[in-house]
Image (cartoon, rainbow, N blue to C red; front, side, top):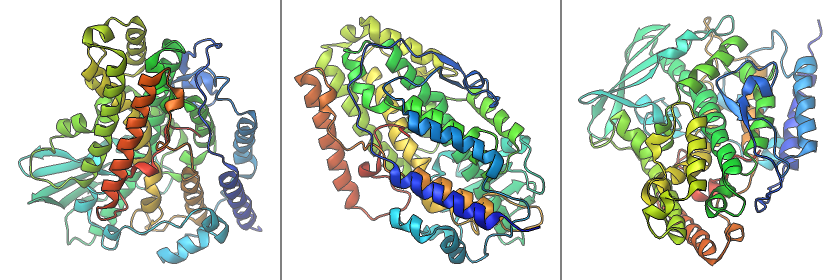
Length: 501
């Protein structure tokens, strides 16, 4: 039988390159007031064939976000997945040499649009102790006792994987050595391994596979885009009047959320979509994972300081560089929200008396599983500012750190396999190619955070607050540029204003 893989590869590479080249930065218009509120419905109702019920999404794409041409493109893409998808059986494994693998998959046409990924220094000799605090996987570290910590991803073992793959349930144990960590043991379907064991390197690869799978599927898509991100956008669009100052504060950070979530759901969760074709889980297991992790969502993860406190990693002498980077952005965003609110509300009582803001909060709290009270409420300005600043941080910083930032980590499958095979083989070339093209698409340039959004404000008070925010972002950019560069580091100039597709 003649292989169609070379033709499929050329076709889908071309799709990826054209999609990237034709993407345009979207200008954010002022909110309009002539449209009925958006309702939240189960994802399975909005997308027949995607059997996820505990995730709520918008019942439609609002008129000002709609892009019929792009929507038709993604509908056609979903049909193509089924008739001429970027896979076929028995494709040879990706080249063992990491540079050869990337050179083959990331073509000159790709590189002309966006630079190739860089290899993190920690991947030369994979160091889980460093990666636990200085990588996109920093959010998994939890204290278990005095000087002991863990990554606990054992729950992933409950989900069926494609034939021939190792299940992803993993627990990594860490011990503290001064400000650093070292991995001391890994428990998984491969057995219990400690440094020096013959199976240690393979166990490290499985641990990284589990972390990157959970980050991509759960921490990024379910816990940024779908569960809190969609709720934030629905509540802000539907519960606040067009000319309300809080709506103008939040508008740059929710505009086009429903469009983005629609196109990415079609592209990634449809039959034959990216997620089931790249990662380890079978389709039924993948859909169950989304339902389960939506129901278990804890809004504490949206606030980096409270999340770190809950995980017990503060005040124990650890060097936590990613957390410090995250908190620096979070502080600027919370300060922006507080400055803006104080421009319109003379005191806590004035804010608490605003029925529109109360309705917004109740809508948001009701849409997010287990509520958002851990982030703050609207009984006072400081509490409301922390809640709103955390939501801005979610759709900008966390969207970047749990999504786009994986570009420099996921491509090196000799260290961090995207699938782990029972027989020890490497990923087939079609799986690797789809991984490369999917992550390439995440780097499409979108509406930047570092832009003057004062034109959205109702009056001079709001305009001044937006301009002060831009000045604070510029100052943070300058400060971070003076520090040593790192691939895990997020800079304000990298941030997008929202999760626009």
